[in-house]
Image (cartoon, rainbow, N blue to C red; front, side, top):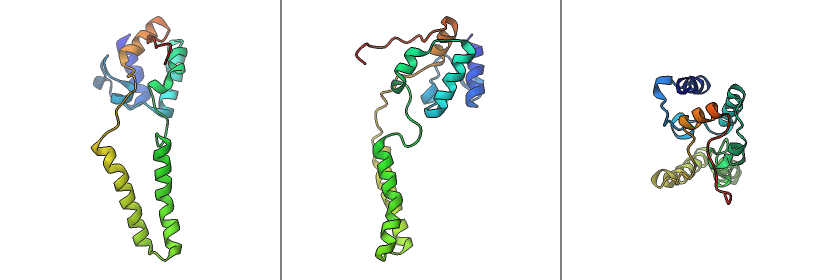
Length: 146
């Protein structure tokens, strides 16, 4: 079953099967996240006739949203896109307003690169998928409080 699930992951993600092991993580190692993860698990559920209800109930503990990630990141990027629109009518040259935007982006991303945010996601491994395919149910058990 392991080789069959690895072939499925490779088919869905475009990753080479020889790069995948039982301990490979979908989000961190394969890069499956957001809408791609939704589509991946819909296809997995169909192919292996597995009940993934517990996974869907705790989706945010495993995968992030598509796009900018957090509302704060979206707001900052939106503000940075608006900077040239606001500065040009105030008499600032397009070159300077574009430069201000670039500096803003660099200032925003520099701390994120220096102090990466802690990853609190629960990894979904190839072994988890093999178990789900074999038992036809999601193998992870979650805290009732979470």
